[in-house]
Picture 1 (cartoon, rainbow, N blue to C red):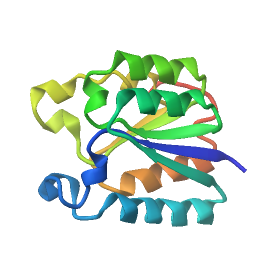
Picture 2 (tube, one colour):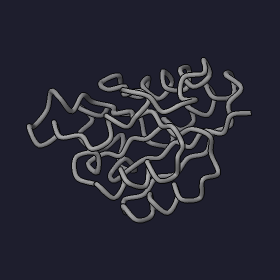
Picture 3 (cartoon, rainbow, N blue to C red):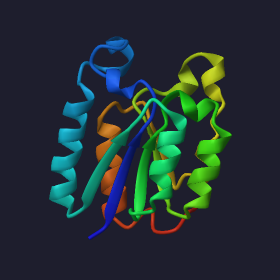
Picture 4 (tube, helix red, strand yellow):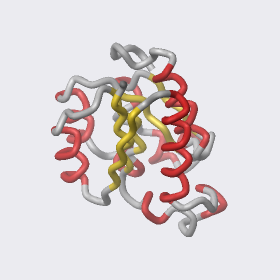
Length: 148
């Protein structure tokens, strides 16, 4: 069974209350419940990890106990060379997900340190983006690291 790590970055614990007009009204727990249900339907084993701390996210990746990751790095997408380096170092493919589309937001969000090393990037689809990522994984996408 394919082991999927869903890695959630800073402030995603505030889903449902943080700028709901951008991120929606579902809480992180509700989003994770939906992901878990869809993963079971697709025959995938899923584990979740969220932290507001860059080092904790990196430490979690270093465990290498997953086959492929779905990563929503939040604001670290635009700032963290260290997270990028960790994603490369663990030699596991990952799909990048963002609830909103950073390219349509503030100019500082247009910088993305992860997109070029992600197998795929799904943006602006809300929580559905995680389900689309799971479907790509179940279809065999994510087996090798390729262009976004």
